Figure 1 (cartoon, rainbow, N blue to C red):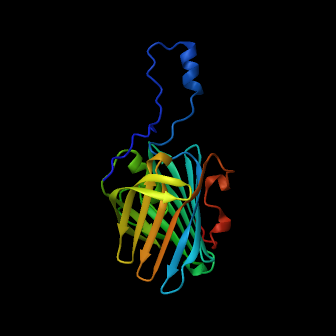
Figure 2: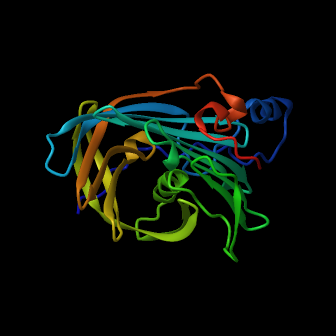
Figure 3: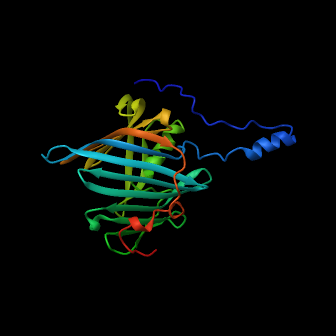
Length: 269
């Protein structure tokens, strides 16, 4: 396995000030707030590739992933289309004491409303309320240890775990389709990945379940955002690689919550 290059992306730290002169104090007060350890800066990334179901011809696939932060609030979105079939996912996350805690997850299927999902997390009470399709929010109570993740926010958790130096296997409790499940991810190597945006060295992280195999390639040079994503199932496959990447703030929407227009249902909290 290739050694991860020293890319010099460690966050800068303000040195300990022994003598607090006015000038030094001004430097500290004017310094930007630190991000959560390992969390990428705000970004937007476009992906392109292909997907196939059963024996049908390959179809064009596209996706956009975006991260927006405002104070302790985080919004992470993914908009995917394969051959005209489109779905949108959004997770709202809050930061507390250096840890991330999901508070809301939305999955919207453009063609099949019965697959829409809206989950609301209360990490302190250890409950999750989930609505599927046009249904109302129903409580799921479990004696789980917070934080509990959703299928999208767990990507953020993987990014931060890799950035913090953990290169082993990961196990997280994830609420998927209204049911808590244990997601186990294995670090499968360090590889070179060719994309339209260039070549990247990336950590390959894989999850294998009864239904499919999910693989991400996370690039240290891009703060561990995925540069390639692949899903393989019994009757379908899809592969997406990075086409365009940009950093910077995007216009805030719904106070960085998952906006109501995407939910596809009127479930009440």
